[in-house]
Image 1 (tube, one colour):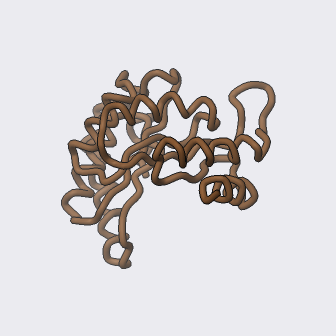
Image 2: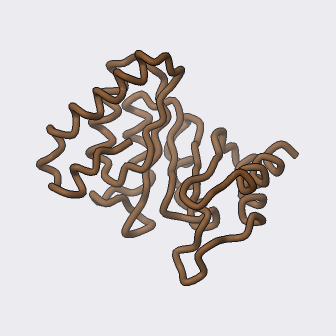
Length: 176
């Protein structure tokens, strides 16, 4: 995952961020993982650093961005479409989004990404609204599972706020 160096120190920290990302990837590879998931990156620039390190490892890599403070772009100003293209062009075997949005808010981002790339989509929405109502019902994950299956989202899960009940709801709907 991201280092948080870019959030704390700005874009000048990109060079510094590469070493801990590459080290984490090396340790995971040495431990025998089958593939990598790069997730919760708010800046496309840092994702590019991570994808470069992942490519050097030779491991298949899934890459997902988190979009904030606007749903229409990541923190360094790139649209979901642009992010998807860059991640796919840099070798990600699946691209998508995770965290920050509940299922209904994440779907438009995923559809924009789908239109931009041919690789599978990955989605891990949060289980909370970004309004005063914090927890969303499991039915939202059931509906998301149905939509994910119908729209060809090949990797679906959950992020912050999810527990086993949400994932079971999503899985049942995706398998129906």
